[in-house]
Image 1 (cartoon, rainbow, N blue to C red):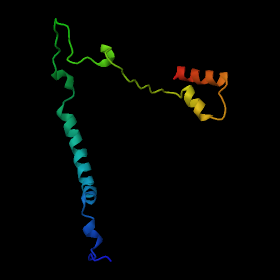
Image 2: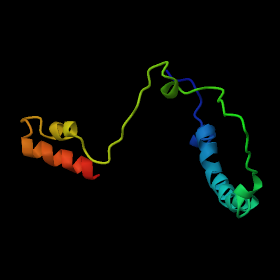
Image 3: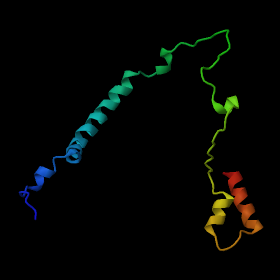
Image 4: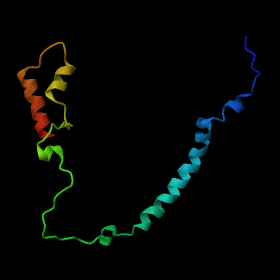
Length: 112
């Protein structure tokens, strides 16, 4: 049997989720008004603050990336602009693609 006294729902709505939803409009307004100030603080030509450094010595990085060093495997992810032949095959799993369909997909990839 439930022996806890009944409490109004308002007392349960004081948790972090309820407090966070009340603060969202305030934070949003603060961000909107702070953004122009931050952009104007850098000035119109922020790159002019930096001087070009010229040295006679060859640049030697502290850490050489694995792809340059050749000392390890590198995982590369390719994002294609058009669907690959494999994606075209997956769209029609009940049959194989004809040569013309494969060529059409390959041409589409080359043009993209």
